[in-house]
Image (cartoon, rainbow, N blue to C red; front, side):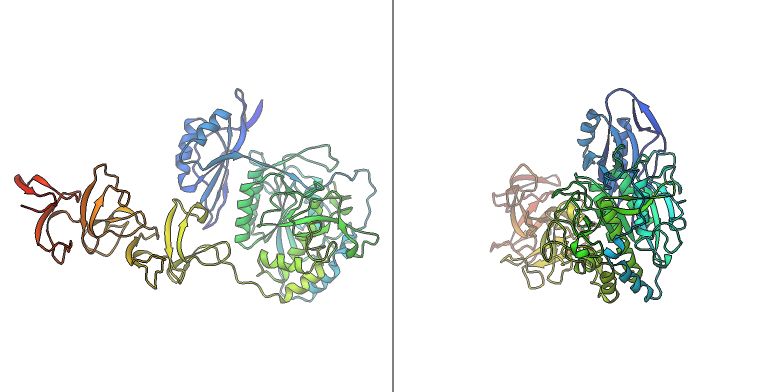
Length: 619
């Protein structure tokens, strides 16, 4: 029988922490079910639709797990049969139903537990750790940097990690220890990575972490996302659910205030929820470092290969470990499209049961880069991920072809040079993206950091709920209300000057619009109807409605009249006047019904019969 989440109630939505996000567990127990085979999926929906989706899940009696809200999008973990999945996919409020992708640890399994422990941290000299420590020693006012190790758990009681590792939370939904400070399980992998980053220095015991200068540089926050105790001998295969990893990232950022996030894990398939969590972390000022993978070939590994992470290749030393220029890519390491290399072969660090051992992998390399980034953040807490990435890649030691190459990226990380450069680095101005309120007026900045101008078809990719047209002036400001288009202030490229109307949200109005209302507050005291063509142009004068140019949804083609101000005329109208200059020389009376349709022929108005010719002129 398969273990799935037990259904105990409706989804009510994830709690939001300020303008950010947070995860709320709704059900903490597992139950067993029989019948059709169920698999774990992730439902994606707009956060304002979560109640509607909840109702559907209740109707289908779906087993619900964790819920994660990232800004305006909610992700719901569910257990579904194939039939249930198809039904839910058809619901109009559901954006998608995808797999709960699995991520795997990136430690190599070549080393044996029977290997002799060697007190040989060769990577220290190889990455110029001493140079970095010199910079730290000369920098006053530094503060400890909180580093998240999202992995398989860390042995907090280890003599070289005691006091360094502040938490060891379990982030596996359904586990009895979910979100508790001390996870019930730890493993070599997470403990090994934690030691590389911050094992206590100068304590006459074991090793020293790369970022453990004076033991005042880092604090490690561990989050267990893998579901078993593991070793690195290849005998146990484990994986972490995508929701677990995303959960841990958000928790580290929002609850524990981590500045650097280590992800020594990955998947050869895309993990969109983890991607969203990484993007959110970077947006909040964090730097994300991820393993590049252990496939030994040119391959994509996620989340490392997303733009929101710094991806690390594992390197090995040449004849002389103290000469980083002799380093080469380790045979097992993935490559291609990565950012930087770091030692990842025969790395000596802490393991469980208060032990030490060597291990290989891009996980270890990512741990090393994480330590260097933490030292940079200790010296320059104002730097963002793009700045830090620029610093470590521009100061790396070339170990392959000159400059960037697929096998080794920008080269072997040089901690000393990176810290030296960071001290005087001019931080780039924060790149604006998305909607930004500037002095009470809205602008939209694309992924390139440039403000939109002119017409833009706004879609869900820009965070919009409904696709629509908006117009941004030459100054980048979103236009709202009445706008005279085809002018110097609104040069939309159309030869004819015309009026268009944009709602308070900046959406171009088309079709029939009831003006002078909260939806279309155009400043006119009297509520009235106006019509805007498919191109958003305000209609004035005579218009033949129900045609391709004025498709108003009425089956019958008819004539309507709109005054110079665009107001639809109804009732009796004196035509050929200043108020209704219809181009006819003779002043005459016409009648328009409540729907604005011009009347012709015999018409009863107020119980009295009137006759109009085929032009609509009263006889």
